[in-house]
Image (tube, rainbow, N blue to C red; front, side, top):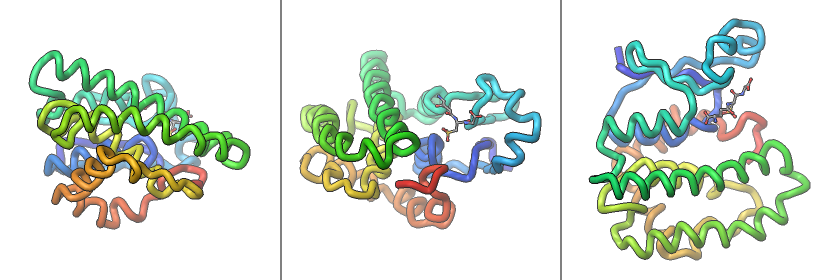
Length: 210
Ligand code: GTS
């Protein structure tokens, strides 16, 4: 039995980064897929700390909040920096990615038809901030010289933008970001995972928009 279990809806959503991390770290995990019928009719929602998924289990530990899960896995698999200062920078970048993720989620679920133009206008400015960090660090990663949870999180959000319809700015005009995407995509276990049905057959978002 794999040590980890992810319980979530049949989408990539907020589990994409943790799945990519687990694949990259050579870990096995079990997926429990929850349909909307199960969710609305069963008692799972009431049992979740904040009434939401994903739920992540490691033995008798049950965790909620996708970024807390990433942080746990980062600590467990050496992807949370080499010292306290790097960990603090990783936290800062995780929060920066979360700000962008929330904008993306709002676009997809609330403003797909009405807010796309404005979103796309503002996107290059958001991406340029991450590009500047990558260019300044010079290792191809956001912080330090090895992969961290901030990298998995940014990679996840950028993969979503790389297929966002109408989006011509996919980070490819930012040299740091371009090199980052190539570096992350070509890590052998990530490449293998992204080419697998386990990844390709699961829709990005719950409403089918991307
Ligand atoms: N901050 C939480 C996290 O990062 O895990 C947000 C979790 C969340 O919003 N979960 C949604 C949910 O459970 C699903 S999704 O947005 O991640 O796809 N929705 C069902 C409900 O009843 O709230």
